[in-house]
Amino acid sequence: MPGREVFGEEEIQQVAEVLKTGVLFRYGFEDQRKGVFKVVQFEKEFAAYTGSLYALGVSSGTAALKTALKGLNLPEKTKVLTPCFTFVATIESIEEAGLIPVLCEIDESLNISVQDIESQIDKQTSAVLPVHMMGSACDMSGIMAASNQFNLPVIEDACQATGAEYKGKKLGTFGKYGCFSFDYVKVLTTGEGGMVVTDDEDLYKQADWYHDHGHPHRSDVARGVEKRMRKGTNFRMNEMQGALGLAQIEKLPSIIKNHKKNKALIKQVLSRHDFIKFRKHYDEDGEIATFLAFFLPDVKMAERFKEKMKENSITPGIMNYWHFVANIESVQTNRQFEKSREILERMVVIDILIKMDAEKIADTLDKICKMF
Ligand SMILES: Cc1ncc(COP(=O)(O)O)c(C=O)c1O
Image (cartoon, rainbow, N blue to C red):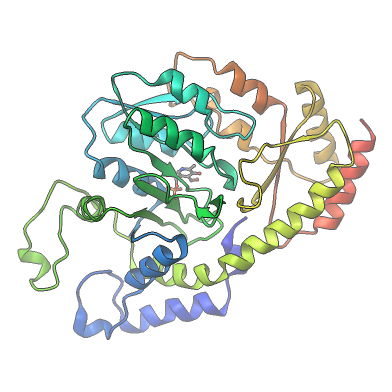
C-alpha cells in the first residue's frame, strides 16, 4: 500500500526545490521563497483531486481529525459515534477534542454498521464519525440518511482511503469535513502529514484558524500583528511535506491501478474455493485495493489458515487484531462488540503492495486452500 514504494526522482526534485529556497515554513518569507509555495500548491491539487472546494494541509491524520472536530465547535462532552474497529487515533481525537466517543459495531464491510449508528443515537449525540477502513467505503447512503434524519454533522475519517470513492464521488467529500493521513505507511505519503477537506467556507476558516493558533493568514498584514480569531494549536504542514505530496499525488492513480491489478489476481485464485467469503464492499470499483480481506467459516480455520500462510512465507496482515477496540488497552468501553468480534476473528488479511509478486502469492494461497 505505501506510496513510499514509488519514491523516485520526482520526490527528490520537489524536495530539492524547497531546500534551494531554504524556506520550510508554509507562510511568509515571500522575498526568500521566490514564489515556491509547496503546501499551498499541494492543497490546491488535493482539493481538485477530491472535488472539494477547500483543502487544508496539516501535520498528520490525527491532527486532521482533531482539527475537523474542533472546527465544528460541537458542545463539550457531547457524544460522537464511531466504529469499534478503527485505528486508535480516531478515538483519541474525539477525546482530545473534549467529546465522548461512542463506539458502534461494524458489519461485514468492516465499516461502521448503519443499524448500530441508528440504535446508538440519543439526545447527547452531536456528530457521526465513520471510518473508511482499509481503503473501502462505508455505506455512505445509509450514513448520510441517518445523520440527516437526526440533523447530525458527519466527519469522515478517510485516513486509510485517500483516492477511494463511493458511487463516483471521492471519500471524504460526503460529510462536513473529510480527513486524510499521509503517514509513512499510507497510499500517498509525505512521511507524516494529513489533509482536511470541506465545501463550506466557514468550516474551512475554522479549521484554518484552529490549526495555526487562531491566525487568519491575511496577506495584507504581517503574521506578528494579525488578530487571533479563536483558540488553536500548531498542526501546520511544512514545505517538505507539501513537496512530497505534490510528487505523490501525481503517482496516486497509477499506485491505485497497480493495487487493483495485484489484488484482482489474488482474489481471482481465491474465489475458486467456495469456503472463502470475501469482505463486503459498498462500492468495490471505488476501493483502492490496499488490502484483500476474506473470511473463513470459523475462528479455528482462520487461525490454521494464517499458520499455513506463515509457514509458506506469506505474512498475514494484523489489522483485524490491532484495530479492534477490545485489543486497545488505552480505550475503555462497556460493550463487548460480539458481532464485530465474530467478524474480525474469522478474517484473514493480505496487505497488497505496489511491488509484490502477486502471481507467486496467489499460487501459494491456492495450494493452502487445497489443504482445507
Ligand atoms: C483510520 C485512521 N485514522 C487516523 C489515523 C491517524 O493518521 P496519522 O498516523 O497520520 O496521525 C490513521 C493512521 O493510521 C488511521 O488509519
